[in-house]
Amino acid sequence: MTHRLHNMVYATIDTIDAAEKVTKTALASLSRDMLVYVTESHDIDYVNKLLSVLTPMNEKAAIIYFGNFLPFTKEKDTDGNFLRFGKMLKGDKKVAKKVDAIRAWLEEEENTIWTWVKDNVTLEQRDLHKPIVSAITKALKGDEKTGTPPLTVEEILRDVFSTDISVDDVLNMASTVEVPEGDGEDFPAIFEDYKVEEVAA
Image (cartoon, rainbow, N blue to C red; front, side):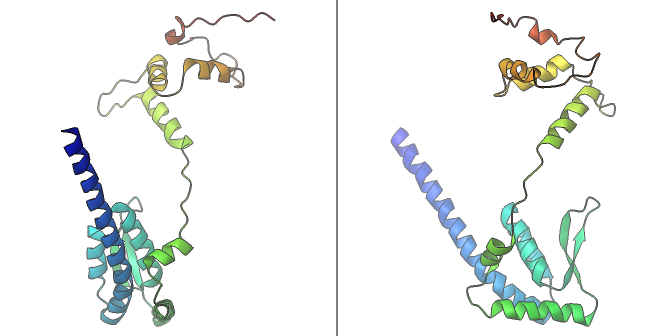
């Protein structure tokens, strides 16, 4: 059973790997053909159709790539998230500049969406502090709309300690953190059973 399952798993991985390679190759070719087709037909719907069938990562790459070359506006929702490519840009000079850039790009046969992304797209580092602070702040306040009661400090700390962060980590850090006067009077009950041995000087 284990041997058969082993073979099935590896066969599935190989299938996925092959599919990814086919997708990458097809998208490379299509990224060139689409630039030619859309500039000649002014039919942006085919690009939007392509975006709808791509994986999230490939979709992001395609939006940036086609957005750089094609003379069409980007339609966004109220939060500023991309929805689709819309109308052609107004102004002959703007359109001509885009078309010239496409022609120059297509002169080199090796130029595809992947070579462009490699040279022009850098991944921005995410700010991981803000979502943590926001989540804790919301947890302490609760949610009146849904009737969700707030969490206590002890409950939040228990959640923290359910991760790879330990009580030792918090106690070791405590000496480096400046606590405003008056804070810390209500020490969370979670620490009551945690015994700290005094170290002789």
